[in-house]
Image (cartoon, rainbow, N blue to C red; front, side, top):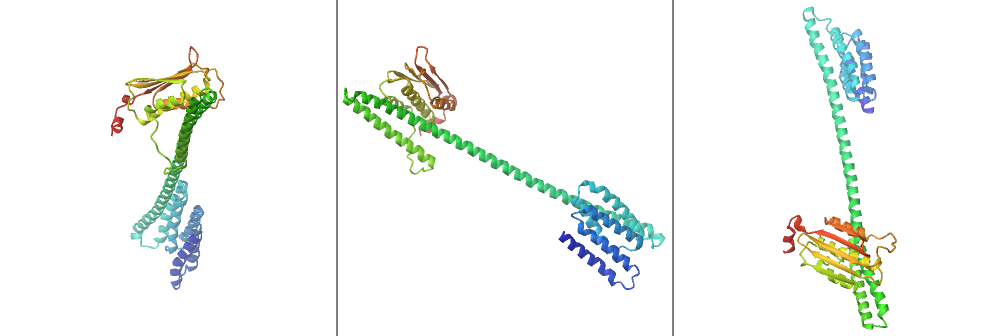
Amino acid sequence: MLSDAALAGLLAITSLAPLLMIPDYEARTPSLVWSLVMCSAVVTRRVAPMVSLGIVTLAGVGMAYMLTVPMPALLAVPVVVYSVARYRQISGLLPVVVVGVVASVVGPMSWTRTLDERYRFLGTTIVVLLCAALVALAYLSGRYMRERVLNATLDREIVTERFTAARRQSEQESQLVTGRARAEVAQELHDVLAHSLSVIVVQAEGAKALTNKRPEAAVQALTVIADTGRRSIEEVRRIVSLMRGETESARFGPAPTLTQIPDLVAAAGDRITLTTRGETPVVPESLGLAAYRIVQEATTNFLKHAGPTATARVLIEYRPDDITITVSDDGIGSLSSSDGHGSGLAGMRERVTAMGGSLEAGPRPGGGYEVRAGLPMPNRIGKSWLKEAYK
């Protein structure tokens, strides 16, 4: 508003100064009055452009009626027309057309009425076309600037919306990654601690029963307990270090593989036997870890639920197309009560599904419980991993 008032003042000074400098000008008073009225229209050109158009129209009518020459204040007309196009919607077009056409005809006719009749029509026509062109150019310039500003605003809103959507998507992906990482860490901790603690409990109970009868067997059981506890502590420390981001202090040992399954079964006690068929193949680390964890979880469930006198058998069959793992027992695992908080079976199923395999678990027809998992060999999807294995 202040800038428009300053513009109106500047236009008034430049328009009225020439009138004051003309001596003995008979129409000085109406010229000054109508010029001031027309310049005042610029003050409201932004906040009320249609009001400014009305003021300009009033001043133009007064000039056409009382004056015979164009006034410098007429420069306010294209300014107001530009403002109507710039700050109003397309609805302002009709008043501008009406006022522009009438003013472009009436004004030049009042200015050229004193000309010689031979030149009056030509002169009037030229001035009419010039005024109409000036009004049209001012309106089109205003519309162009309005559309340009609206498009720029729309582009900024689109960019802002895209940035907001990208940030929201990034946050959601980060949350999903964090959730998956936590689930994987929780599964690893469960696999390590559940098996180790189950082995420790079984060996401790055995050592307690053999302390008086067979001391040497009790000592051996205590040794297994100590070794299992130490390995569990190392695994837990490694996982916790990774969770904290302490990669320097974390000890990165090789992940468990197929060749370590016999030691795993042996450490679980003499109630579990292992049978393998076929030669142990070279497989990717992820496949070997999945097979190891499945055996570990199945034997853990046996130690926890099958009962103190039950026996189990682990059968691993290495075939060209897949690895089949079967852990069966003759215990009461299918009848034992559970607290409902276990995640062992769900963890096994997730590992098998991730490797593209299948899992079946449930009571055996003749009693006991059986877990059967099938893991496909990588040769189903190509053997490019062999290049890495033999480097």
